[in-house]
Length: 248
Ligand code: SF4
Image (cartoon, rainbow, N blue to C red; front, side):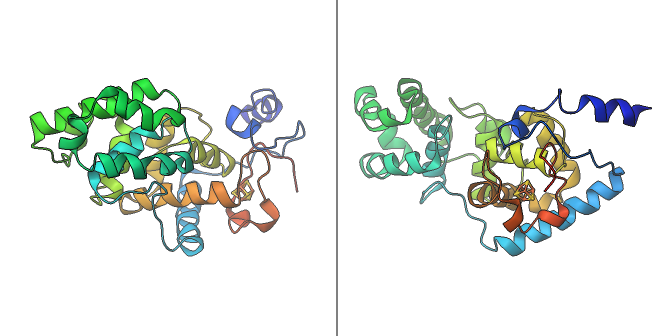
């Protein structure tokens, strides 16, 4: 009975994430699987992603943990490409926490202006730098509890820095690509990044948390792009439920 109700409701209850991905009103039947089957499929997806993207790199340009933290704060509501256009000048003028903490609000705003929310972002990165200097001798703390006390640093930003620079897996980074792809793949039915993160932390081995996110983000940019996922050319096709998409 539960199965019948679910299949009837599915199109009307379509998620925003899948709706953005070229979803037709005629969607494929939901594929049911046990938790063990899902975990086994998640392991295969993780392995296939590693084959597709052997080098899993963060797309934000940086040469230090400090620069990665700044770039990640700036990337909120903005593409990595635009951040990468602004940070060379920012890091040339203010290469470390001490320099950025001493910078004027106006000088920083001028550089980050093209990124949107520039006043808030300038305030946050200056405030973050000032606290790094006053509380942590200018060094990036290597645990999530301390990192999230810094201005502009939430769990996602902290996880990016800890995982990418320090190799410390503190969570699965769920950005817009990861949210969309985990739904399409049928690994989650939630749109809530916190719930998705918890679910992925259950499904994916801890030593793969960092790379899993980076690789899904690459895949979401190259093949499983928003609104027009290229399923016919996708290396994950046989492992993907294509949740919410029209049958091929
Ligand atoms: S088959 Fe590939 S491109 Fe299509 S929805 Fe799944 S992951 Fe995205």
